[in-house]
Image (tube, rainbow, N blue to C red; front, side, top):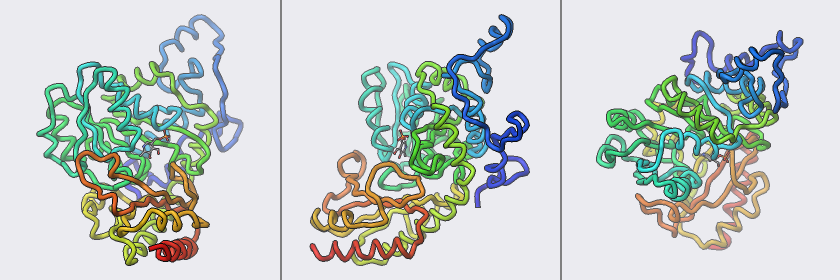
Length: 396
Ligand SMILES: Cc1ncc(COP(=O)(O)O)c(C=O)c1O
C-alpha cells in the first residue's frame, strides 16, 4: 500500500482527515466552496497585514480561498512536499514550475517522453523567451551528466513517460542535476500524489495534472505544483505572476476526489494490471508498456520508487492496417475514446510516439494504443477488448 512517511497516520487515513475543519464551518464535514474576489477587512491594520500575502491566508480571490487552501494542504502532505499551489490546469502548473526557474539565456533538459504539451512549451514559448532545450533519452540515468551545459538550470522528468511508459532513474538524475546547481521538476501525474513521493527521490518540484486522478471524475481542470521549503519562493512568485489560479468549485471537486483516491487507485491499478497481463498473452500484441508488469524494462525502478500502479498503460500491436485498429477501437462499448484520463471510466486511444520522439525509434508499422482502466468490472472490460480484437483480426 501507499508509503506512510507522513507522521503516524497512514496516507489512506490522512486522505480522510486532512483539509477539514468542521468546527470552523458549523459542523459541516467538508470545507465549503468559498467564492471570492474581494475580501473585506475591518481595519487598515488588518488590510495591511493581509497584504503581506502569507501562505494560506485570504487576501484577494486570485491568491486562493479557504477551499483552495484545504486542497493545497492535503496534496502537499500526501505527496510528501512542503506546500502546494493550485492552478487552473496541469499545463499552467507545468509552465509555472518552469518559469519559476528559467530565464532568457538558460538551458532546459526535458525528457523526450514528456507529455506532448510540455514538449511544446519547450519548443515554443520558452524558446521564444530565449530559453534553449535538449530532449534527453528517458533511460539516460546518471548519463545525463554528459548533457548538462554550464547554463542548464532545470532538468524536467516524467516517469513513467507519456504514451511510452519508460521509467526514469530519478535519484541518479537528481544527483547529477544538484551537483551542477540545477533543479529537478517532475511530472508525477501517473502516480498521483499517493503512489510516489518524488521528494524522497530528489525532486525539487512535483507537478500534478490534478485533472486526472486527484479530481478523478473527468469533470474539472486543475493543476498542482508541490514544492520543498527551498523551491517555495520562486514558485510562489510564478504563481502570483501568472495569475492562473484554480477556481474554488474545481478545488472543491479535487478535494472531494482526494477522499477516495486510495480506493480508486487500488482498484484501477489492479484492473489495469489484469488488462495488461491479458493483453500481453494475445497474439495480436507485440509488447505491453506497463512498468508494474514483471519483465517490463522499468520494473525494477518502479518497484524501488513507487508503492503501487495507476490504471494507465500502453500496448504495441503487431503490424496491422489502420482500418483494423480503427475497427477495434470504434466498436468498443465500455472504453471511451478521448483525451485525458484518471477518471472512473475506462478509455482507449491510438497513440503515435514516432511523431514526437527524438531520442528513440518508434516504428510506425507497429500501432500503439493507450488504455486507462476505470472502475468497471475487469471481466466486462476484457470481454469488450476480446470483441475488439476479433474486429481487428477480421480486417487483417
Ligand atoms: C502527464 C500529464 N501531464 C500534464 C497534463 C496536463 O494537464 P491538464 O490537461 O490539466 O492541463 C496531462 C494531460 O493530459 C498529462 O497527461
